[in-house]
Length: 288
Image (cartoon, rainbow, N blue to C red; front, side):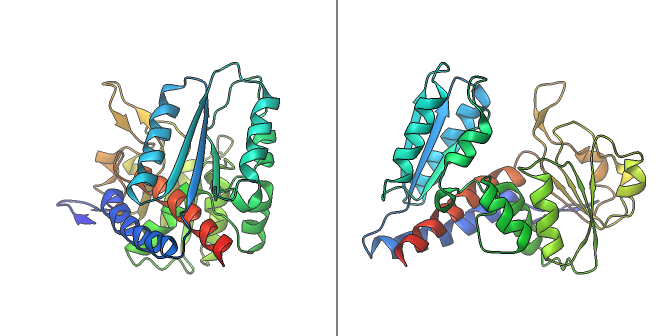
């Protein structure tokens, strides 16, 4: 975390990730001393360039922390049956504690079937219906990595959510909905906004915390933010120059907000770190 003048404090996802990964590495070493190495299997079907980058970063994160990782790449024309069969084999493999199929998958494969085929005990992405149900009801389970990372960022600045108004822009199963549930668990009052919200600005101006997660540039601008608010930018877009940017007009909003996450270097590194945490926790459970 660094302070900038003028404007908001920056929540540095890279620095926080390093800190958390150091703790993960220590826990991995403790497990290894008992003869157990946390294992993550990552499956990539097809040639999506963005997916290839994400997958590479996930595997590197595993290796850096001492995990056992398997990267399996398959052609775009892989059949749904073949993928489901592979997942079934990994479900039964005791050396694998987490299974991740990189989305999106090619059109001949039903993503929901793939997610549901992964054993809930190895669902380190937190997308399985059992994980979603556990989060909904407050039971222990895997939390989707991006919202989990956002909560860690709020924790890192010592932010108390009790009684605060949080606005989540976006309602995806991967970020928006689980994010809202996690904020609710910490006693925030939560509003979920989306494409059918009539007056987004009226909602965001009331917010103490805003999480922007729609994948659309400049969805949040300075005139939409209450002075001192915490702004977490989950978006990953490209600007006119082709540079990576988020959903938030960073330069404008940082003049008004109290805290803000940059893109790149904010939520992104935290997502992969929380994947490592989930995989480690799966291995610890298996070893208990």
